[in-house]
Length: 250
Image (tube, rainbow, N blue to C red; front, top):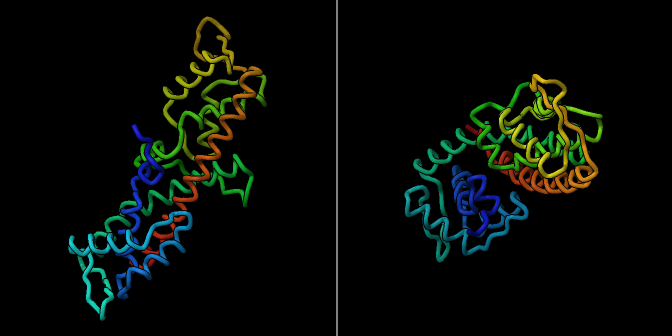
């Protein structure tokens, strides 16, 4: 099976993004396809699209009733219809708060991994429950948990997974379920990256400590997580900037 690209993963294909950009840019002003093509590439650097594709999206939106057109000589000017404006507003209502909350968490991960830029403020509240499943589709939850567990294993003589969960909440404002935390802990033990032991017969808290293999694996996980967080954060920040414009103008 072909691996999904990032835009497919977050629910926005190039087509989706272009369609929304057409509807936003033609709310008050008629635009040619060539204008939209240039403006889109300026606002979404790294997301290159051909002029022909931009023009084809306009024709599809017109066929759906979301854009209307008029001809000036051989050129076509497009403007958003009431249907198009309503569609744009529905998307904004759905995604503006979601992107805003998720970018806050991503900014904290990005700083933790790279130390680039200004340190984000500590979480004032955890990531809202309704956004958590969406967030989990964006990042590698397994790598996030493994990263922090292995980092703790290098700074403490021993630790337990509840501490990993607490640090995820305190540092980033997000944490997966307790069941998933302990699943990852068992996997790390089985693979030799952590060593665990029960301190007493009650077997309520399992102490964990690091291994030499875990130190090496930590570097691999950190690099992988940094690459993914950087890519996701960059794209979502572009989208948030875009939706912020719509939000302000509503």
